[in-house]
Length: 160
Image 1 (tube, one colour):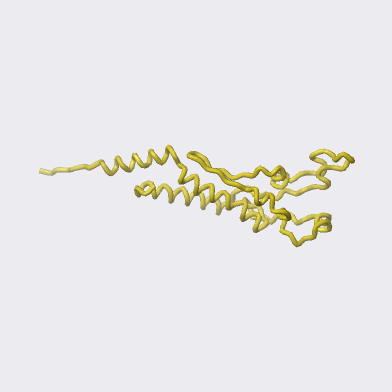
Image 2 (image 1 turned 60 degrees about the vertical axis):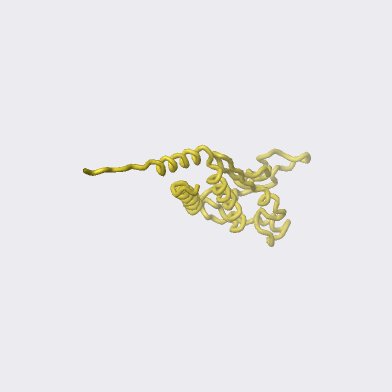
């Protein structure tokens, strides 16, 4: 006679852990928010588009004449770089900024795009090239996948 004994307690506990993790992904999204926050930080440090690695456009001669070229691009005051923040919750991770100048630097702006000054001068006074600091490149995508995989492995090991 052959007897087969099946214990499903361990499988049930694992499934319960997976279900609980699926309801509240905060540990995973916290780690992902950290990864996302690193992306613009590296962009400012390297003065390059995080998605493509292409260097940001050089400062215009007029800007260099006005403030010199010793300061890194977009970091004279540090306000924009310092305004980057990340958030996370049970089902989301994001990075952003409330700095009103951010879209202009991310996407660029044409001379006069925002209207004119009281004296009739264009706003901005010249073209501003896009210098993206938000975006994801292949290395960022790989890091996000790695964080997600490690989180899944912890859940499957019962440590999640």
